[in-house]
Structure formats: C-alpha cells, structure tokens
Image (cartoon, rainbow, N blue to C red; front, top):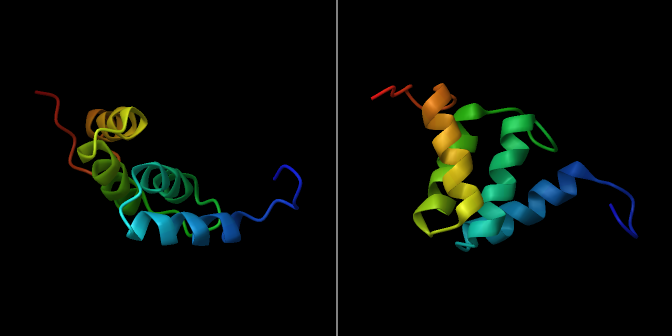
Length: 81
C-alpha cells in the first residue's frame, strides 16, 4: 500500500464491496485477487466470473482478462474456435 500498510485481505474485502454494487473496476481487481490468491483463496472459476462481469460492462481490462481465461481455459472451458 502507498501511505498505509499493505493488507491484501482488506483490499479484497473492499474490492468485493464495490464489485457487489456493480463497479466494473472493482470486479476486475477482485478477479485478479482470486486469480493470484491475493487476500482470498485462489479460485480460477471466480476470477473468470468476475472478469466476465467487468467485460460485460465494457471495461477493457476485464475484456482482456476474460479473453485470456477463455483462450487458456482458465476458469472456463477452453474454446479454440
């Protein structure tokens, strides 16, 4: 953290609050937390779900991260079509 001690659990908690209210950026960041296991247990399925939510709202980072999940079959069935 900048100006505060780093606390991955608190960051994930706050991202979750905003993500649950539909904040696309928070959905994407929380997805990253789940992908990496940062502040939450690692869960590729939840990461992909959150990236998809952000992508559906038009967030470019969410679209990129969800596309990567689809391409690599991370948290979603792989689709090489």
